[in-house]
Length: 298
Image 1 (tube, rainbow, N blue to C red):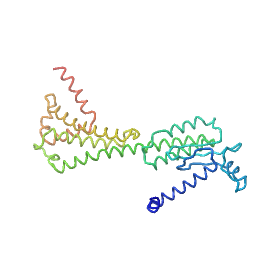
Image 2: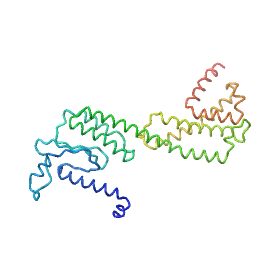
Image 3: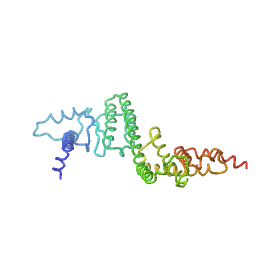
Image 4: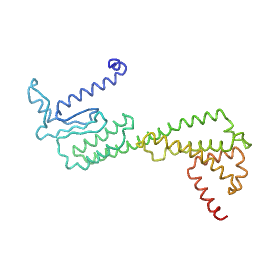
């Protein structure tokens, strides 16, 4: 199976071979530390190499303790895609900065594609390297870049999930419109379909247009998970359909303005009102609040 995989995906096999070779060479110098390497970020091991090369090759053994006065350090991404570091240097002066980097590193990101998670950890790995080497200002610049990168990727993932959740409903609406073209008939005459059905259909359509339009401006967070996006999307569709029906019912009541008496009986008027109700989240509450004083005065 492994031979077949190597033939089908040679790039993966080559990458794994390079990773294994790098991991073995690092373990030779950092024998006292558990290292499970996915990707190396930064490495300084001059003192350890001097210890290893100070004995004849036939007698060499892995370095089992930090050399004296060593400033060696290792920054890497492990196989769980967590950023990790090992250092012989005291970091008391950079402890607050390292803690900030670790807190950013712990932000939810495992729901993103692996390539994006690794890219995020690479940027933070650069910040951690700068902190270990004493370049605090550059480290903070890297931390800001990492936050901005993660924020954009999280928003993109959330938008992708929202649009994917919309596909089944939009496909069903397209099928209904194909099978029942009268739902889209914009003529002023009477329709063969119930006004409630037309209002619900166009309310759902308005909700979809609203979600697509707002997806580029809303604050989205995919860290909440796919299922919450799914539930929120379908509740928004259901709310749009109900809002369309409610608005048509309100405009058919005795409290509705007279202009609706001429518009509402037609299919086109029902379509427009249903779409507006589904598109606007605040339309129904504003109409209800407007009618409430009139009911109290009667």
